[in-house]
Length: 368
Ligand SMILES: *Cc1c(COP(=O)(O)O)cnc(C)c1O
Image (cartoon, rainbow, N blue to C red; front, side, top):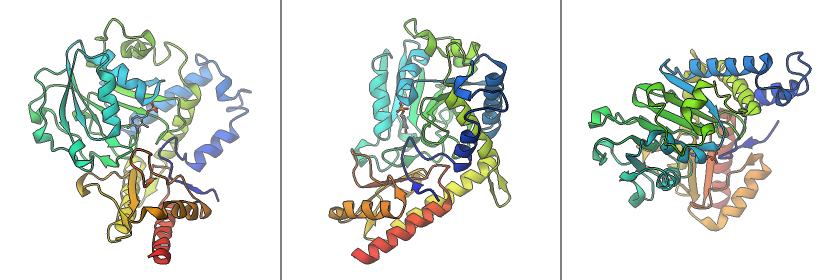
């Protein structure tokens, strides 16, 4: 058995996906070529791309009015590409809820004419989400940016804000890099969603952008052609060579997701139920203990990334060494926050979380 990998990203990939990729590595479906060696314009790769797009559209119930773009550059490049395409030389609003939205607002200042912080949870140490009713949205903003799951601080929007109900017509932009495909997305509230693939969809190198059609065609003149959403959309993500291996691996992951079952549930509903149970299992272990602590408010705790601390931090090294010896990998917290972090992405089975909980309890018993 492989160890359980709690990495925040690049992160664990379902074993069935890795095995299929390994089996097809030298010869994809009798073509005599591996996927990395194929022309992106050949019929073999086009079929891989079309299947991946159709499966993602089905899984996430993406409406026809949205384009799915397979890009490169990662989440951080999108921090520049979004204002280059959507800011229209106007004002843009940001809600700051942790390290990732902080990075996004900083980058947007290079490209957007006016950048406004509508709300910030910094005073809480990013352990809560500012109530949408308190957000100071700008009149006529080109868009409102949020990070719907803060990977480092472990804070998640369990519901996306309804900007129209808050009196704003601006499209909502979500950086959903670290929880995409872990739960459904309410597209009626979203203008654009972007996500790097390396948390929940496959290897690093692929970035997904799902954007409402009416937002295309307004890029700033300085926007690089390869990053102009309209150009990318008009060319079915093949204006230049797309990340072919990443698209193939994401396609295998979509296929795996469609096959998931939990009771009567299938696909994304099954994965969501499982993710909810996994997170509950871990929080229910941490909360009653005075040995471990998670500081995030209950109504916005992430199901994907669970930062936690040992009350006595002098035991951190012993904790991590013991975890590794048991096949529980990559539990060290992000350097900016410290402590521990367990990332419970789609590829993490319930058995992995149970193994972590068993270890937490045993470590507490032997050190309390
Ligand atoms: C991991 C992550 C990113 C990082 O993107 P890269 O450019 O691919 O490193 C951006 N946003 C969030 C929320 C993330 O979790």
